[in-house]
Length: 110
Length: 122
Image: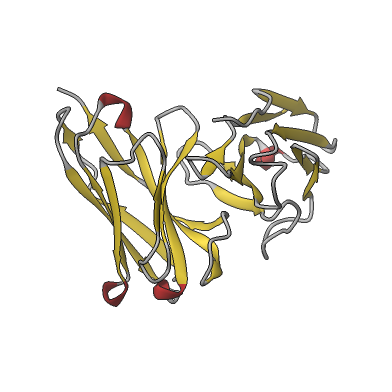
């Protein structure tokens, strides 16, 4: 996919965790078209963060996004059991395939 | 209700063709760029194609360029994906997804359908 995410991240309830998404100067580092999605098993993805750090209405403020250089990050504060899901980053890419996703990170609440 | 509903997924032989449809409701369909995103069962997401709000601009992933064709009918609030010369690696859930902002391409997807399964197998 061109974007790199850790396969898994875990933490106990109440803790904060961070999921990273590393790309290149042709995607994550090129502009602010970075987004994050949550997907529970058997469900469609749900938008959590757009344009690096913006949260759609209705998404908990426990989810926040940031970016430094070619790496974007999703932080989940106050981890809750319902946060257990797969998380994907997405980005515009200034190359042949214009849209790219990371491989996904499985978040486990211990 | 704001929603997207995909249909048309079936089992098809390698080299075959099919057309997927996506019915939109609850928002002004003609104002938004629309995308197709696919997901191999148990695997990650792959962006497939987009079509601008007015239908004038289309883009495709390298993996489907020349085999898939995206189109839309704003009078019917519908999005389509024609899949030709199918390969086993095209087996996936296909989601239609709405771009996040009016009359632009902002590369985030704020509304997704539930997906339709395409299986390419002999």
